[in-house]
Amino acid sequence: MNTSGDNEEGQELPSDTNAWIGGSADSDELEKGEEQQPLVIDGEPISGGPSSDLEDEASKIIAADDASDKIKKAIVQIQYNERPARLLTNRRASYGFGWIKYDDDGSEDEVDLKDVSVVAIVEG
Image 1 (cartoon, rainbow, N blue to C red):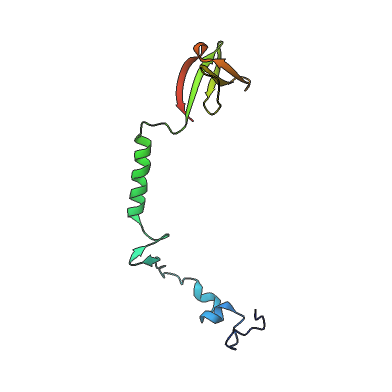
Image 2 (image 1 turned 60 degrees about the vertical axis):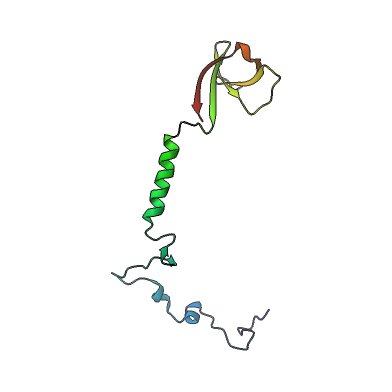
């Protein structure tokens, strides 16, 4: 690696980056009233440019997601021994049993599902 300020062909490299690109430090700033040109590839604006088509597509996706009747992460609210709790769906239990977490003190217990009353299913 050459650290003397010369490139591999023996040409001296400028120490100032702005001198290398042929401009001054002030040339990067926009003059008053001068518009910034959008970045484009093949005539299409990329990030930072006016892209109402992308915004329209994003709005449609969000609206479709909101209108969907599917729940992404369900919380099953239950009642067990007259105490509010929720069913833990990510823990394995014996057949006919399930793990619950009490809402009042946060303790967890494996219970017989015959004794559980489903109160609500909400999105978490």
